[in-house]
Length: 292
Image 1 (cartoon, one colour):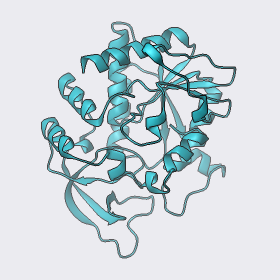
Image 2 (tube, one colour):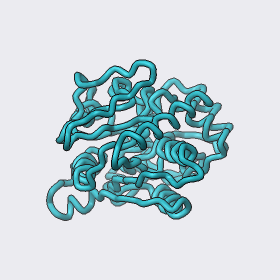
Image 3 (tube, one colour):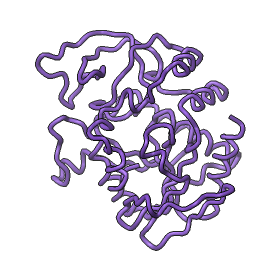
Image 4 (cartoon, helix red, strand yellow):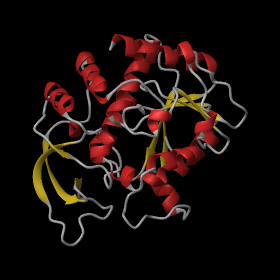
């Protein structure tokens, strides 16, 4: 954990010294929370020299939005919000038949990056999450359309990071690239980091769809034939309510969560994210379009 923390702090400081207008993508999920904690450590006692950016799908968990707002106020941070609902209201984006808005995040994200002229965008992606994310470098160059080309990946020998980019391009930066889900939770335990309560076991009304326990909501669930029941569950990852499934769990403490993850053979996205199951290359296709 010390080595991973040191690497992440080094990356934050490298970006601060090399770029003019970086921003931290902050969803209120555990990875972005750990990433912000590391940024606070990297520059303490000075304030974090980056703003936060949240892509709000309009179907976020209320507990996560409450946590986001409390965190911004607590640390005196600046928050930019790119709203999917705004794009739907303007007719730029259309609702999907399945109700999920996760794939609709790309346009609001990329246009906000362009309008605010962010030249480096921190993300909480980890290589153990998903096979497309395993291809990422720590510094990931995006073209003037925010698109990702695996063939333009740069070597990163000896922790030397190349942030050179042409006007209009930017770099996605992943300080947690070498962390695993277990590392993240062990670090949360060591540092005493507060998380939204949905990461721990709680009773919730859910219904089953495609093998996942989903929360009912305005996004379109449940449908006819899908019965709602109260179960003891928790969330391993947090995203759009329409595609983020809960898992049966009685892990109501950090220690119990760590024990549960250590015994699991499924990644958190593989187990609980329907948007990654749309096709074999769903994540890579979205990354090429500008998604994280």
